[in-house]
Length: 216
Image 1 (cartoon, rainbow, N blue to C red):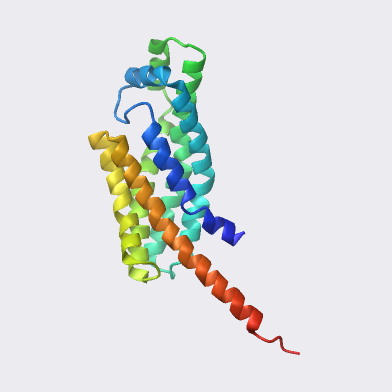
Image 2 (tube, rainbow, N blue to C red; image 1 turned 90 degrees about the vertical axis):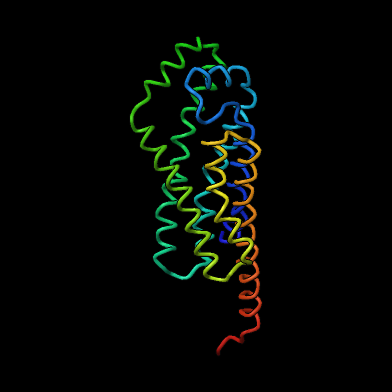
């Protein structure tokens, strides 16, 4: 089970990388512009939802497995305290995309669907805030903790550190799907290095355990 969790480390970020690249709309678009964009690209939105589901069930096990490479510290605790609820709130973000796809699939009037999105429950905004702060700040702290630990190459730790600020710039400020793809791919590359290190450690422990004689 532990090996499976380690193998999942880069899967979640890679799913989000492709998801962000394929997303039919710009994050800062208004509701009507978002509805129109999804209505014109329902197939891409469907792929986004499938990738989002896969990311939702792999991101949290992945970040917990990555934290296993770290000694106990406040930095590690804060990284997990922010990342785990942040990634869990991805489901809140996806709820709007489910509605957008359903509206396009049912040929709902764009104006009415936009009004429905604007009338979303306040918990959507709270969940969005938790997601943004949690996954951006939490991933940065995780990267810093990995860098300080020396368990993985410095370049891999730096890839994790810079990845989510790069994603935030791409998604919110610049509106660049390509830059967003690069940001999340950096997260995946860094976590793949963590998985490689931990899997190598597990193999060493297994070989040592087999060589250790059992006491009579």
